[in-house]
Image (cartoon, rainbow, N blue to C red; front, side, top):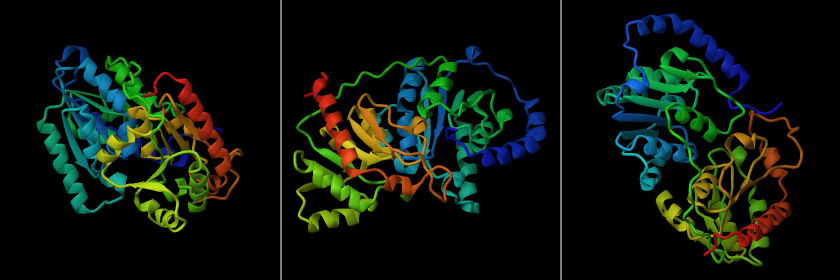
Length: 365
């Protein structure tokens, strides 16, 4: 059975909670004015995506389609604080509000909830006409209800359909971007395949980005060293300095590998990456960024279902273990043992094939 977006036990508990609280909110909804998208002038649009940096990058094409359909509307994006500078640099929305939500960083103290309440008041004052959430999270739906958007669109996967004016059934088999596309389409936003203006430099560097938000997504240091050793024979290699790569960089310097070390902000990284040939990383933000700016990428996936979150660029490929997960693990989706089963030589062979595909394409500098 294919892995889903949400764990069955979590869905069960959240839906029970939704059922318990539903009479109260349904009663209040009787006294709220009902609006329809076709009958209102959409001046302000709110989009929620405050989980991880990669999640925001995934929906950038959808934000562009919303912008295209509503060119005179003000687009307001609430996103995680870490993504603020990078997303600002894409210049897709009019206003970005960086936040740390209690239910995304597991900080449930009084100060955190006070900030949520202040944000709700701020959003109410904006008089939002149309609001989107693509996660299907009960808490996000509650937030939109509190904001009092005239029309709110989202999924009721974990419950809370009564929080939305336009709730939709959540398909757990769809890619994260396609789920967002589905809701945007319901608001009349037609998604068109982006035209990649970025030309790939075949003389650029192969970029290694070992960073990950979870150690169970990461690849062992010894494996990165072996892969870089293989690549260094015929290619220029660079490695991105992130907390997870500090020890690896020390080892590479100790072994006197001829590898450039990139260090800088996410905006610096985006600008620099556009000049390179290929990015290699794990299931993380970096692969999605490469796909968005038109840079080929190879992403390493362990036991997680890649069809839900894989990078979707024209030259984005993934490498997984050859066998299905059979390990005793401490996470329902991620498995460090599966990551360790990915062979360096096999990854190298996939890189060579990808580079050959790039050479045959018509998008080289």
